[in-house]
Picture 1 (tube, one colour):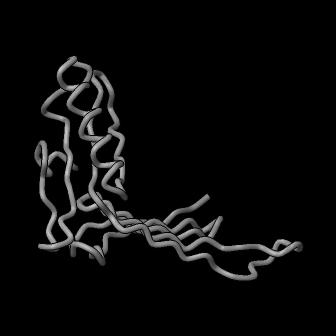
Picture 2 (picture 1 turned 120 degrees about the vertical axis):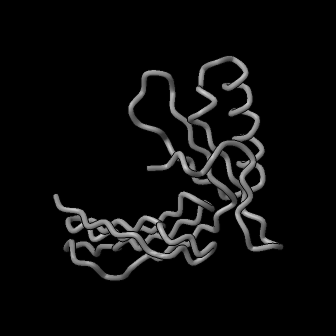
Length: 131
């Protein structure tokens, strides 16, 4: 299985390092912005014989991003948020985890997309934590 990865400008917030991932085996093409939460997918739809009959194009507007690292973990989950409810739930959960010591403060990040100003607002943490 082979994948191609490149960095592009995010169509929503213009962040220059939105992650595009193309899977050469499944033909799925995805764009994900770790800054604002924007996601875009192109997925093939197959007919009965296994041939591609059409493409499904899905765009999910970003509402924010939550990321953190658990103590001792080497990876960090990134949660792309797409609704106000998801953002509120993420903020509540993140604060609970920080207060209990389950997540290190230095590794936590939460952003929100402001549709009026067309800017990303950092609610918690520092965006520079992303490699």
